[in-house]
Length: 279
Image (cartoon, rainbow, N blue to C red):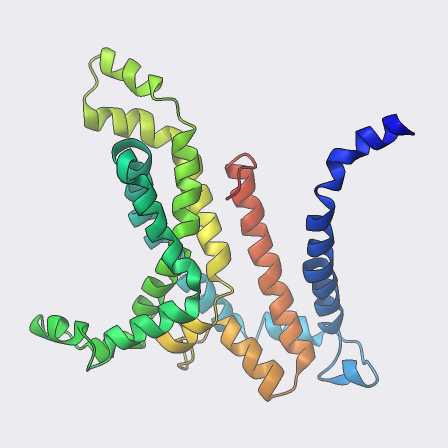
């Protein structure tokens, strides 16, 4: 009996995490998936099962899917473009100030609502960016409700996740490869292009997938930065409108279930590319 307890004791440490995942993710998702096969609000009274919700999701709401995927992709791409140099500097150049720059990464983790309201204020005609943009002939208010401003806000929101994924990958690359290339006569740019960049591609892909998976479920940023405008609406906005305003819980659950599945696929891809290393 003691030997059996000794073997299972390490597994007991993961039990609280498994219980939380079961209670707060698996059970709600199973319920959401069940509701997605019911008509309208019939789930609360006498459930009427149907497949029409998924038919409507992939026909009537294809533009919403397109807007969501495009916006999430733009935000993730900005994260990779700006986050890779940041992760590189953290790991290779500014070790003495590393704690300071890691602290900066914590700011976006306060939540997308703060980021959305902050950028919304910056882009207002009375905001601090207005005079600067107007000096270049650009209307700050015209930029406010555009996919560009929403993508920038999403990039700020998911910047820490992307940087940390790329930083983990860079920290696992042995500098001896670059030293060997230097001994063979390779310059700094050549070492980066032919040695470091190919070795860090899994980190780049993992950072992009992670940012994309977080972006597609964002609500506050699209709501304040243009996601409610006709032609730019994203799924998170539509799910709220269909579920809470139209009381069509079945269709809202179908859209939400599809969104969760897409996010899980990209999170799984991020884990596979990074060989199981997660933040």
